[in-house]
Length: 289
Image 1 (tube, helix red, strand yellow):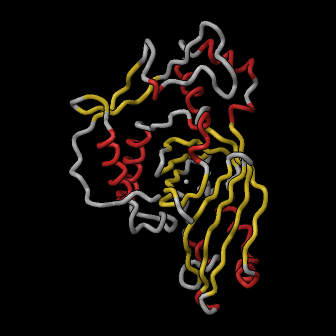
Image 2: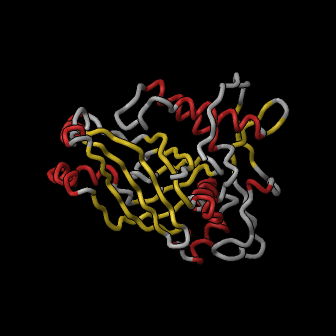
């Protein structure tokens, strides 16, 4: 939203006492495990002969080796509990809580089971609900939008149609002064894989230099996570709610306009994490709505 929300809830039972974790950089001089490799047959075709994609990848380890499914589930549970009661972070949270959430986000990102999500975009299709983002509405903006007492925020939802390259963000509201009138802001956007906008000759250039220029490796890794998003249209329904926001509609839309790019830094069957071109973080869980 910038609300790129461009994200079945998992159950938060009890928190397992976390085991010590360390993170280190591992340089691959040979083939890495499949979860860290880019398939030779990708959306842009085969790699040039003689060039093999090699990335510098963060790997989180325990004393027994690479973090397993049990520890990954534990990190997800800790993250889910950390974002409880923060109202998506939309009205700001204490710096300590923000650091805790972002630390858990980085741990999950280092264990992303879908490292090249744009090659498997079907995993992001469907409905998602926002759990947390670093987008905030504070001070005079919150007052102008009536979000202190008069209007309450409901769920933030996103519906993604991968086949059509479309995403619909829905932000629900309820207005207390209008007999508890319920309504929503709907923002429609189109998206495409960022890699498709990169010319094949430029890709060959980056493949050639990937072994000697670390920043090139980072570019190749990030571009396999990135989608470009274009705003299409928006609306507020019902009309009574539009009348409430009409004066400050551009302000509202400026907060939730998804225009730009989004990197899908973690994707599994339950949760999705993204980072946009404005530095925002988005954490979403799959929704049945």
